[in-house]
Length: 340
Image (cartoon, rainbow, N blue to C red; front, side):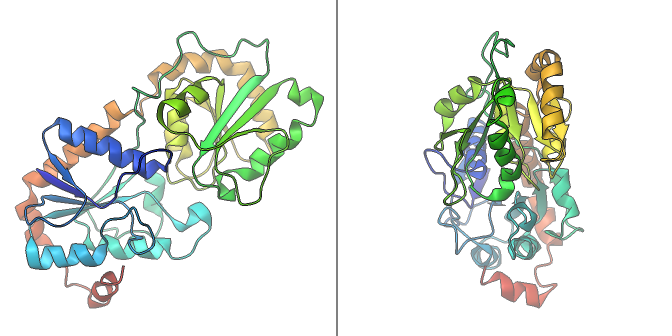
């Protein structure tokens, strides 16, 4: 089976989509499948759409127009899979949902990285679809043996984000920064933020570390006790998964996909209004939650094979799928696709 992924892998610190593509490539090649990142050959079996921003994102190697041309003129039997991992709600943008919905017209199968995304206007609801969760590489993100909060020192919180958008949870992170002005709270907690900040923003009391990647990132996460994520409308992300795989109980916001990924492995909060209360609850329940983290299921060993199995299933049915395809159903959408 030959798979073309429309995303170029970057080395060093990058976003969650980059980690997903890297892990998927590795998993496919372990099963002797070929992986390419273009539409050059006429023998591609599966085309995976990762990001609709072909003209704005240098990592995206082909867009809807090239896929459409490939299906019509070179290989109509290739199966198109669209992985939806974005939305306008995530960063308060305009146009992303429209682009996702438009490019989804080409999809033979849609994959959501969280059930929450299915509720948004980002796809054709009649399309065959699956929900396949993200997983972190447990060879890198694993817990220290015997680690955990000893209750003699402040509870060490950590989070990490590649993107510096304020909706990543800065209402909560700012509140914690202010809490640390209070000697009572500075004796109880410590907070480290790894990653990019909003332009011009600086913390006063929070430890800030520039973006890290791989083992260096994992080592820094493991130095802490609790993983905090206050992200709003998170499509799924990798940050909290990596924290959980490092053995840290999760303090997570009731928003977007976070409950689906975090429930049962931490304490949920609503926002700045109740974060202080939930911090105290976390301290009271820490030991029990820490013991549960070894059972956290979202690892590459558990999740990436699900993608490979889906591709293999679609490959076995690609003749039937191509016959049922209706590319000409909506000429307006067809024209738009040529420019995306």
